[in-house]
Image (cartoon, rainbow, N blue to C red; front, side, top):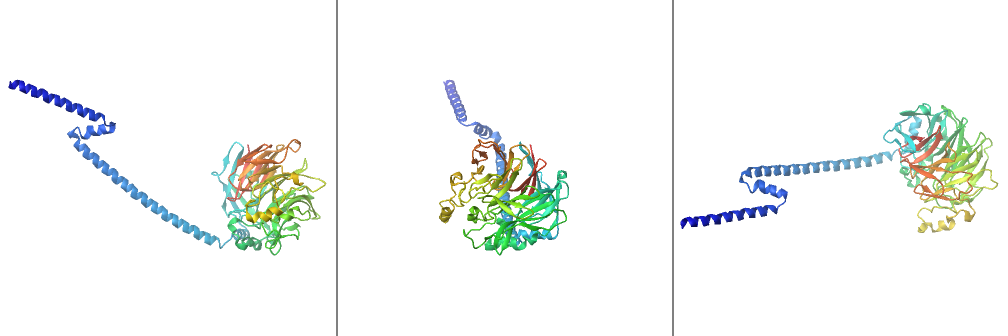
Amino acid sequence: MKFILKIIIGMFVLILGINFLLDLSFINNQFDKSNKEFISKYLTSHKNTSKLENKIKELKKERNKFRSQKILLEEVYTDLKDDNIEIKFKSELFDKIIQQIDPYEHDLNLKKQNRNLEYSLNKEHSFTNNKINTKIFSPENNILLYGIANQFPASGYLEIYKNKLILISASGILAYSNTEIEKIKNNLILKQVKTNIDKFIGEDQFKKSRIHNFDWLEGGWFSIKDINIYNDRIYVSYTREVEENCWNTSLLHGEMNFELIIFENLLTSEECVNFYDNIDSEFNAHQSGGRIININNEKLFFSTGDFRSRYRAQDQDSIFSKIIEVDKQSKNYKVISMGHRNPQGLYLNKEEKFLLEAEHGPEGGDEINLIKLNENEIPNYGWAISSYGEHYGGKNAPYNKKKYTKYPLHKSHKDFGFIEPLIYFNPSIGISQIIGLNKINKYVVASMKDESLYFFDYNYNDTKLSTPNKVTNGKADNIKIERVHIGERIRDMIYYDNRLYLYLEDTASIAVVTLN
């Protein structure tokens, strides 16, 4: 009997043991893989207790490591914050110091000391794409500072003479490359030419960019505007102070050489726009034109802007807002076209006898105009009656109400008796120089605001081409046009030996562009 009881008790224990193991298996299956591993290591086996203790130690080490990294990051952040405050302080201090020395003073000091302007090839900023190969020479020593419409550094204009690159800065420094242009490799040294240009524009005029608290960081209103060299004669345009605080755009000339140039006035006028007292109660010397292009030994073309004295653009007897033909011998002139706001570019097609003129519009409406030569009447391009742009601030600005009454800026030229632009840009690109390329009917125009070149096709003999042709986002209505981004404001551009040479005024650099 006892034996049977022991067997029954043993079977009962066995059954309970099997159920217990099955329960453990069921519970184990409810955990994910990581939990199973944890259970296997630390709960179902008493032998792994030491492993669990080691794991806890490792976790503590990781926690301490993260704490250390957090402390380190906090220290780095604090250091950077302190450095930033120090940099900000130094920047503010630098601003205070530089305000004591205007950019024109720096440039005039370079001129007085006859310093070379030194540039070197900037490989990081140079680039190549499917349209152009661009080498950029950045300033290294004796960097020019006086700019026209930009913050420093400086503005300038380019030319070629005897196979050497010529530069004239906005402040009147004239310099030439010490090597022939095709031999320029990694370094570009420009040597100064002595001139008497400060007789016509200098410290007194540059200083007046700051009257009425005009901030020099916005650039200098009064400056050199262009350079052109033709058959050993050099021509330079500038903003002339005709009388106290009264200005126009005038033209100098002299005999070109690399030692000393004595300039004389070739074209000027006693007509001027007063800074304080003028009909439209506005003044802006950035709107002054000044582009020069020689025709032959006897004549040249010259552009003038309106200085925001808008009514003069429609006054045939005014020298402002015109394209002018100048007789170099007699110094007489005649108006070739009128109704221009601020002509920044001129290209003469001698074979087909027409001009392409590029001008700044107001807010929107930069234009490229076709000017046919030898016309019986003076062609009128409509400023400030018609324009595809708007007065700054637009029609809804209360301060523009009277302005629109006087200068309505109609969105048609033809309907009001004016000539439509060949091309206009809306929004504006800050248009500058325009060039004809060697290939037939191929042209390029540069821009400042848009920091780009626009290559376009134009056939003068295409009678089916309608005008105007609007360009938006780099594409035109009826004209093939291609935008190539450069990345800096292009103040000036010349074309020589199948290359474009650009003056980039964001960094005062010079770019050499080969067309692919």
